[in-house]
Amino acid sequence: MTTPLALLPGLLNDGELWRHQIAAFQDRAECFAPDFTTQDSVAAMAETVLSAMPARFALTGLSMGGYVAFEILRRAPERIERLALLDTKAGPDDQDMTARRRGLIELAEKGRFQGVTRRLLPLLIAEAHLANETLVAEVMAMATRVGRRAFVRQQTAIMNRPDSRPTLAQIVCPTLVLCGRDDQLTPPELHMEMAAGIRDARLVVVEDCGHLAPLEQPEAVTAALTKWLESE
Image 1: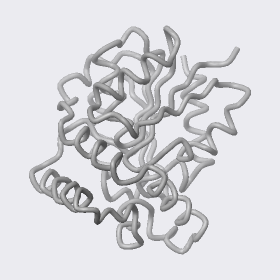
Image 2 (image 1 turned 135 degrees about the vertical axis):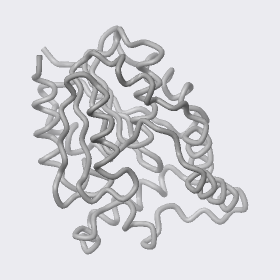
Image 3 (image 1 turned 90 degrees about the vertical axis):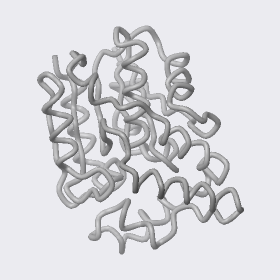
Image 4 (image 1 turned 30 degrees about the vertical axis):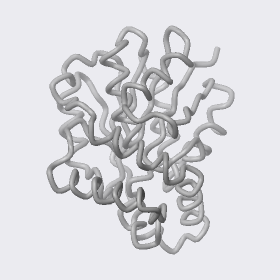
């Protein structure tokens, strides 16, 4: 029997973020990777997932997808069979990050959206992977497909998300917290904080890996998710 599994992408990501895991889980999980290009709030993104999934399902989110996962838990905790939080954080942005997001929105609205450029790649993938042209092209292509208008909507949703730290103790389902050792955007200490706040959460830190763990280290991420899917 397959497990319904929602795989939520991050900012400027689409379902291709999870292509390795979807292929690996074809006999074990019925995977759904939602389109987050038309919504401008984590609430709307959460409703997209809840309306598409069955009564009970497993939930995985990366970065922005993690913020949406927290919103889903606030709205329908009884529907979540198990939870995996990848390269994300429970707390809100600080003032500097909020200002940076507003600046990027302003540039995009002026028509100066460039997606993911090579200048931004060190924030997304580990230094060891910057020479991997296949991976680099994949990351940049996802951003191009998501596009300028969706980028503005996603940044708006992220800036207006609630602080999820007060609700960590309410999570009671089997939970995996995973990140890349070299994640520059949501570093390991934030994941340690999340794991410490969630009862019996399992923390996995993936070596030689940045913010986009499912693409950078697909085998390690798939192995961790497999163990999580099979946990009691």
